[in-house]
Image (cartoon, rainbow, N blue to C red; front, side, top):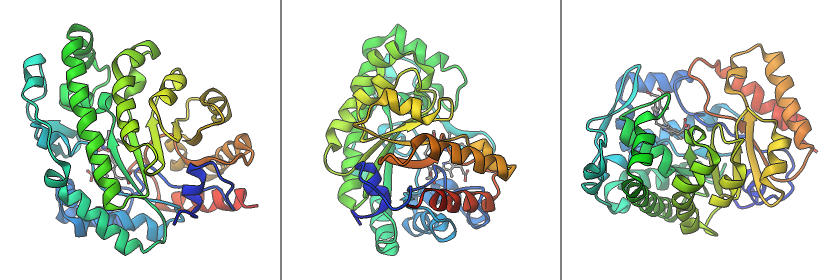
Length: 342
Ligand code: CP3
C-alpha cells in the first residue's frame, strides 16, 4: 500500500503517473448515490458502516481514482460536543442552537471519539476490508475555523459576520472554542489513523474569509496543534479555498500536502508553498460541467505547469458539483493518467 501512487506523491517520491482523486467523489452526481439517498438520510448513511462503506466504494468502482475518501461529514463531531444539527433538504446543514456568545462556549464538552464516533471508526475498518488494498483510504476532519464558523453561524454563511464578531469581540472565548475544537479533532484523527486510514485531510474550506494576519492570530495556532498531533503517523493534507494570499501561514500550520484552489496557477502557488511540500489541486470544479475540450485543456495546463515534478496530486480546487455528468469525471481521471504517464 505504501507503494501506491497517491502515498508516494504525498511523500514527494516519483510516480508512474500522476495520482488523482476528487473531493466529493461520492455524492449526488452519481445515480447510485442518489438511489441510496431515496431510502436513507445523509446522517443515516454516515452512521451506518454498511452504507458508509457502500458509498465510499461507489466512485472507486466507476472512476480511475487513486484514493478513496471515507464517506462521512465534517460536522459529525459537533453533536457530541453539544451542538446537535440536521441537514435540511436544499439548504444544507442547520445547527439547532448555534453558539451566540462566550457562555455557550463554556457549555461545550470534549468527548472520547472512540465512544461517540465509534461508528465512523467501524466504517473505516469495514472499508479497508472491502478495499482490500486496491487504493489507499483518506480520513478527514474539519479545521477549527471552518468548524467554528458552522457552530456560530448555524449553517453556511456568505460573510461570516457572526463568526468574526465573536472572534474580534471576545478573543479569549474564541481561542477557548478553537482549543476545544482542535483537541477534539486531533483525538478524532488519531482514532481514524488507529482504525486504519492511510492519510488524513484537514478541511479548512472557508478560512479564505480571513486575512493572512487574522489567520495567523486566530486560526494558525489551533490548526497547528492538530497537525502536530498526527505528525509522522500518516501523510497529511491541508486543504482550504481562497488561501492564495496566506500560503506561508497555511504551510506553517502544517501538512505534508497543501491544497491549492483554482484562483492561482498551481506552479505559482507551489513557488510560494515551497519545494519541501507536495501540492494537491487545482482544477475549477465548474469545468467538469463541460465543454469537455475546455476541461481537458485546463487539466493539461495544470500538468504542464507541474512539469512532472514529484509531489503533485491531481484534484479539483473544491468538491465535485452535484450537476456534474459522471462521464466527465471518468474522462478527466483517465486523461490525467494518460497525459502524465512516463
Ligand atoms: O466524497 C467525499 O468527498 C466524502 C464525503 C464528504 C461529505 N462531506 C459528504 C456530504 C466530505 C469530505 C464532506 C466534508 C464537508 N462537509 C465539508 C468540507 C468539504 C467542503 O466541501 O469544503 C463541509 C463544509 C461539510 C458540511 C456540509 N455537509 C455542507 C455544507 C453540506 C451541504 C452542501 C451541499 O452540497 O448540499 C453537507 C452535506 C453533504 N456532505 C453532502 C455530502 C455528499 C450532500 C449530499 C446529500 O445531501 O446527500
